[in-house]
Length: 202
Length: 202
DNA sequence: GTATACTGACCAGATAGTCAGTCGGTAATG
DNA sequence: CATTACCGACTGACTATCTGGTCAGTATAC
Image (cartoon, chains in turn yellow, orange, brown, cyan):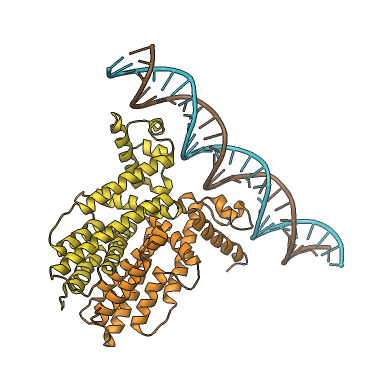
C-alpha cells in the first residue's frame, strides 16, 4: 500500500497485455515495457528479476480468477452450475478480454510442469474450485433437487475437467472450437440428465 | 523416404526429448542438439529455421497421436470409449513417457493462439477425434446398447472436453491431480449412466 | 538536501542462423 | 584397377541480434 502502488498495478496490467499479445514463450521485459508508458528499467526497479515479476503476476492473476468464479452468489444449484460453466468456458461479462485472460492462463498452466511454485498454486486453486462444485451438488441433493446417488466429488472432478477442457479448447482452436456444442452438452447431459434426472427426448 | 531419414527421425526424437526436459518456452536449438549425437548445424542443414523444425515436429507428434488413439480397434463400443479415455488421460502402454508426451503436447497447444498453422492442425485433429467418438456412440446406438436420445455429436464434444481437460490437469498439477476421480466419473457417469442407462446406486 | 520514482545508455551472455570446409562414399574415366 | 570428380552429410567457428539486468544520473516532492 505504498504510494507507488499505481506503478506496480500498471506493470501488472502491462504484463497481462504483453502475455496476451506474445504468449509466455515470447514474453520479454521489453515487450512488457512497451505495453505501458514507463521504461523497462522501472520494472527492474520494482521487481528484482523476471522470475520475481512473474511470481507476483501469478498472485495477481489467480486472485482475480478466484474472485471472478466465487463472486456469483446464486441460490439455485442448477443456476449456479450453469453460471460457473459459462464463466469458465465462455468468459465473464468482461467482454472480449475474457479470451485473452484464458489465453494467458493457459500459457501459465503449460509452464507449471517446470515450475513448482506455480504448480502448487494452481493445485490449491483447483482443489478450491472442485470443493465449490461439490458443495453446490450437495446443496441440490439436500434440497431434493438432485439425484442422490451421484457422488458429489466425482461429479465435481468430471464437471471441472469438462469445463476447463472446453476453455482450453476455445483458446487453442479459436473459432474452430465446438464451444456451443460443449455448453449444450454440459447443460443437457451433465446437469439436466445426471443431476436433475430428467429424461430428455428429441 | 530418402536414405538420410534416420537423421530426421533422430532430430524428431531429440526435439521431443528437449521439449519434455525444458518446455516449449525454454526450447533452444542447442538444447535439441544436446539430446542427440550430432551437431546443431545438422538441424539447420535439414530444417531451414526453428519454425520449420517445429512445424515438422508437430506433424510428427500428431501422426503418432492419431495412430495411438485409432490403433485400438476394439469392437465393443463401451470398451472403445473406456480405452480412448484411458489412452488420453492416463497414457498408453508406453510407460512413463506418456506424461512427458502430454506435457509436450500441452506446451504446443498453449502456443497455438499465436501460431495459425499450428492452430489449424490442432483443429483438424480435434474434429477427427470427435468424429471418432460420435461414430462409436452411433455404433452403440445401432446395436441397441446405448440410449438413443443422446446426441452423438453433443456427447462427443463433452466427452472429449472432459478427457482432454483431465489430461491437462494431470500434466499441470502432477500428483495433485484428481485423475482417478475423473476416470471413475467418466466410466460411471458418462458411459454407464448416460449411454448405457444403468442406474448406479450406492 | 535527500529520498523516491524514474530513465537511457550500456553490458555480458545467450540464441538463431551462416559459412567455409572436412569426410566418406560413389560414379565416371582412363 | 587406379584416379579423378563430385555429392550429400556433417561440423566448428563465427556473427548479428536479442535479452535480462546494471548503473550513473535526472527530476520531482518534501
